[in-house]
Amino acid sequence: MDDSSSGKQEAVMGCMPTEDAEFHNAIKEVFLRYPEAQGKYALSSLALENRIPVDFDKKVAVSRIEGDKIITEFKDRKSVIRMQLCLKWNFDYSECLMWEEAPE
Image 1: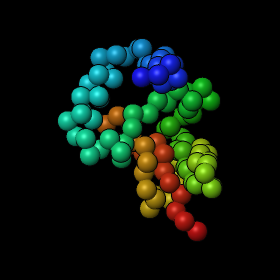
Image 2: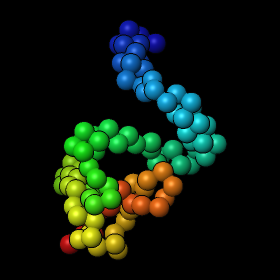
Image 3: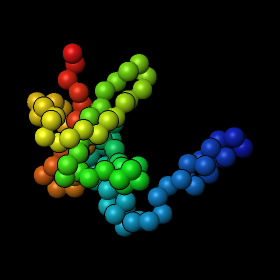
């Protein structure tokens, strides 16, 4: 491995989560057990949503693709049409946190 690859690896490792290590290791084990899911799913943090903060009891994220961007807006939960694809669920799959907008 050359110096540039080593530096990139160190940068990636530097941003790995250090809290909740036991939880992240358990999720990693699930992905290793189901390798076909590795390209379909990812562990997502709600850090940005918590900084706004988003009240998921009242709001839901609705995303759309514009070119090479994913645009996410938070809308009143009651106003969102439920015939859309849910992209992000809460921990027990009882509530959708992010929907994909239906194509026009």
